[in-house]
Image (tube, rainbow, N blue to C red; front, top):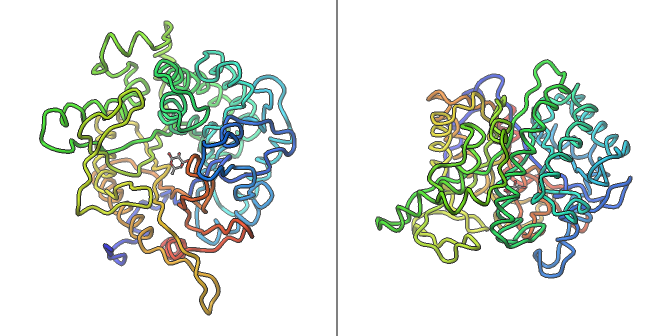
Length: 455
Ligand code: FCB
């Protein structure tokens, strides 16, 4: 097991106003799926469909956060966070997807935001983290342009109510994952398997982001408020020296990273995409790219691993064979631990797209955690997770030293939760969640993070 010298890393090496956070998402933690007027989302339907999630796990209860948010904010306070990134559930706010606003849904987030602020923790709010109201999916979901318009109505309702207190608005979480795994590979809700559907969904997600931006700006009244988006990123290098691997690495980089970066920051889709294959599928209307590429205040980047493509196994499901470096460390999900990729990506995105301000809105790792008894009570020894975080913070620090305007870092995630198709099996938390009892138990990594933040 690689060890890491934690003593050479200190909080005060980072800018004084740096945001130290943890991130979660509504469907992964809230539970209470039938309460206070919430309607089903695509994830309720998907997770209740046999065979779609690990052992049929669902988010019906998850971390029961809807009922335990006070206790959870106490955890954040113990950790010493000054920022918390969470998402809002669209089907709680507008159960019909469009139209009538459910005040009880808004009331919950109102209380959450007030309690966070009372504890000195700034709310970083994601409007869409994958839980589309099922009623909208029944009408075609993100394949339809109308869904982008309904998103604006939803964003308006939320930002009107919370815009005076929320520090940062993130329109969408990882639209790439929504479009590709939701509509092309079918691994995520709504489980469609059609390239055309995925391309349409991707465009309408971008459009939803762009259309909502001016509305959010109008409603956000906290003097230091900001608005941006969160993208998934991976550091791509050829798996070997062959021309096939080199060409494929370029294409994977275009598809995995630049597909969303270019329209957002340059106002066009990547020129490298096969002209007569990709563009004809995009439901582009005049003016769309101007809407999509309006300036934002920050870019949120999620980073977990490197990708080393060798060759294509099945392009229709985006299955790529990868090289597996024998000396590398892998997480429980077989994701390569490669902190240098974070540094390289931060530098590159800063230099090529110049977002002005950046946050790492997610970074973390799943390992096989074991709850053990000790004289002092239950413990979880997770040195790999602690090392993962330290190594990535060091990479982030190096980027800052070299001029990257990185303003914050959010660990994925606060506590173990419903990890989408992987169910409750993949544990990413700083805090262990004992599902049968709902007990929250600090892992060693969580104890370390809180010590690190106190210095
Ligand atoms: C990201 C998601 C987040 C979680 C982590 C592990 O892609 O945004 O909800 O699933 O991966």
